[in-house]
Amino acid sequence: MIRLRATGLALVGLVAFLIVWEAAPRLDLVNPAFLPPPSTIPAALLKEIASGAWLVAVIESLSHYVIGLCVGAGAGMALGIVAGMFRSFENLTAWVVRLLRPIPGLAWVPFAIIWFGVEPRAAVFIIAIGVFWIVFFATQGAVRSVDRDLIEVAQAFGFRSPLARLAKIVLPAATPGILVGLRTALGQAWMAVVAAEIFGVPGIGSRMMQASSLLSTDIVVVYMLTMAALYGLFDTAFVALQGWLLRWRP
Image (tube, rainbow, N blue to C red; front, top):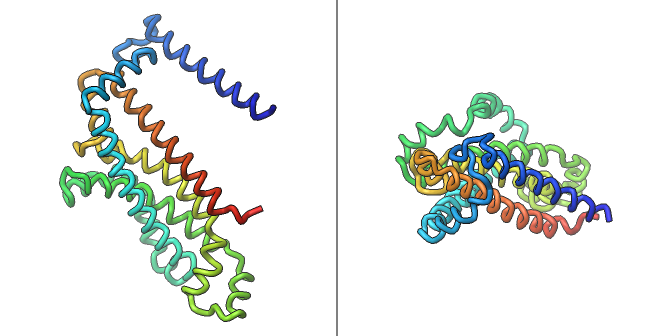
């Protein structure tokens, strides 16, 4: 009953939002060229699909997204595990991390263009940078928070090498924390997609910039909603995977 009520309230909120959005340009409170009413979006979507531009943009962005996410998350997990397990490595890289961490992904765009040119590798680099720090700190924190008593017990039972402790104790115990970081990275990677593509790499970001330059704001909204829908699909799938991986938890 409580869940049904929450769903009903969420639906009411969404409908109210759409009504206000529809009314604002219809009543000339906002210029329709700057904010198109939602009733125009389905026609714009069908037009983009019919032209083939929508499918091409989605496929391009998905390739950048998946590869960038895998590269950034993989590097973040690997270095986060090392930093979490070995205090000496954390101390060695402490100042480097403090120097690079505050630099936003957009600041790397000039170097991405110089190093890789205006091509997909540049977009993958920007997305990977945006994902890396989230996963790195989540992994490091999860590994560092593993109960030391568990590690001592593992050593007592003969798991003395770092790899054995990692496989048998550290990773299983740290998995919940790592998965939280990965789920956050899923959303951050989508935020980075547009930033990675606005300088000309084919994809949703570049298509949005082309549409905005022509004041085709309905097309811009189409791709904004497309990104929201894709993120929703990825997040739902990840939550299901997370539940399966952590099925051993009470």
